[in-house]
Amino acid sequence: MTRFRSHGPLCVVLLDYVRPLDEVDQQMPAHVEWLEVGFREGAFLLAGRRTPRTGGVIVVRGTAEDVRAIAATDPFVTSGVAQAEVIAFNASFAQPRSEEHTSELQSRFGISYAVF
Image (cartoon, rainbow, N blue to C red; front, side):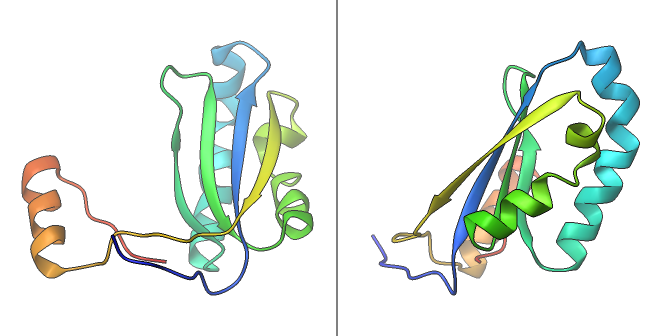
């Protein structure tokens, strides 16, 4: 296993839907736009739906205080369809990036990833 030190603080944002899915879906375009801005600015590292579909998970660069402020601007949160919990953590281990591993993920599962 490879030791890893993150370059700065990291947080996980857990979104919990508190309204019916039809109300959540009405906010989805604005939420996706918000996510795209976060990825473009380099703050967001990973994002996706929880299984079962009860909310979402976002891995974000930043202190808990900063990430709470960012999460508060999520259209899911501002519209009241979801609540956000921010969990700060220190990354100590990570899968090293290799072209072989990336190619295997792409061919087997249709996904790729980037190391933060």
